[in-house]
Image 1: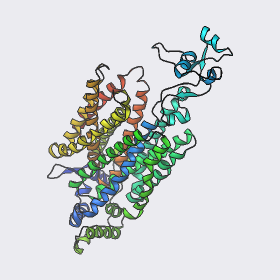
Image 2 (image 1 turned 180 degrees about the vertical axis):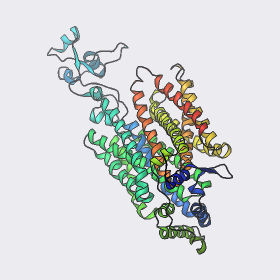
Image 3 (image 1 turned 30 degrees about the vertical axis):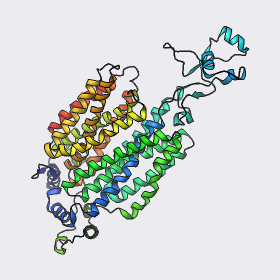
Amino acid sequence: METSLEEDSRTKEFDGVIFGASDQVFSRYEDSSTEVTYTYILQTAGEFGCFQRILVALTFIPNILSAFFMLGGTFMLKMQPHHCNTDWLLAIQPNLTMSQLFNLTLPRKKDGSFEECRMYTPVQWDFDSIVKYGLNDTQDCQNGWFYLSHEWSLITEFDLVCNKASERLRAYCIFVAGLFCGSLLVGTLCDRIGRYKSILLMLMFYAVFGLGAAFVPTFSIYQMFQFGIGIAIMGYTISSISLVIEWLVSSRRVHAIVLAQCFLVLGHLVLSVLSASIPHWRLLHLVGSIPVIFLVSYIWLLPESPLWLMMRGNVEKAKFLLCRAASINKRIIPPELLQKLTNEKIHQGTIMDILKSPNLRRRTLILSYVWLCIGLGYVGLSSQLHKFPINMNGSHLAFRLVEVPARLCSIISMEKLGRRKSQVLALLLGGLTCLYSAFIPEDLTSITTTLALMGQIGLSAAFTIACIFSAELFPTGLRQVGLSFVSLSYSIGVIGTLLIESLDHDHPETFMTVCGIMTTVGGLLCILLPKG
């Protein structure tokens, strides 16, 4: 089938990549005359002056909230030890100890522990007869549950145990569905209304759904709010990365994105500290999310992307923002240089532009698979924390602390080895350690924990490198669409984690085996990506 010259030239325009002196991958748009002029003006305005530092810091702060909302459910929905409420016997004999009450009213499992969802059927006997003859008939819990922990979580408030235990998994699935929808919508949203307005909209979602979740009257409403939070997290992540990338020259982007990931880790650490000191889930959610109120100031503080304004034909506003940035950086942009900015619009591509180009199509499919593996492994390893021989807060803290050196070392790795080799090595480290740990006996806790931490290091570095590599491999006109498309795969990976975990009780090695094989294959596939 013949194509028009316009379609053919557009496909070629999106298809090529050019390698700079530092072997960094740039799209043709970033090497076109418009982009070179824009990059040169950014350098003239100050590569990383006071303006860029403030902008980067502002976009990083909400990442702390993102981390809190993303993993808050790990603590607020963690299972609590419980048994059926059998206080009917206290009406007959009120001075019983807890041990006596359980021994008389709760059946035991094969391992000798008390049943959590079954109880002996109440009888109208006197206490001596109950002690002498015992109880035999059992039934499901009828009068609620007794919780052994003093923590007031979502589990205890809404009784999400026994026949309602599946509500916990449903809440996670609804949250991931929000991530999926956020990935699907934010690319188009950023291109239509801009990076600035997209960020403000996502921050409004944080305020409404994040802060509002602390006041929900029912668990069904809480699940609805989790969907909104999922949209906000993914939407803010993509739109903020786009804004930062388009305000920085290429040599500064890596450090900015890695630092943004470190702020995510800081949010995880804050969550660990708060969850250890605040036993009530509503108060924990309120304390963790109330800083979103101060983000209303972003209406006046954040700028729009000059590159997006140029793509929309609003060159005068772009010039104004660039001059303001130069003024804050105590630099001056020569007027003759500003005049080189024209009203020429850069083509806004769609997913069809990616699929029609063989090189971009292959590149996108590989990146999508890589993001799927990262979502599967990174979130899955976090869900395995309860299996390690230290308490939940301690294991969560240890896992997050190892992420900081992993992400910082990824900077050195990318500078010395390039993007592609760094991505391959990080995925292989994460995949092989997960695969090895699947065959280590559970009683060898020190080896299991060490391998899990090594897997976390590899997957954390892979996540950071993938953010940078993916943003650079897509042309400017397709960057939003491309990032949205590959982030969909991340959401699918998280969903896969939940599905695999449902089998984990009977097959504990299933998750690590699947994660290890898929991630190792993803690392090998990255060899086919362009050298970066």
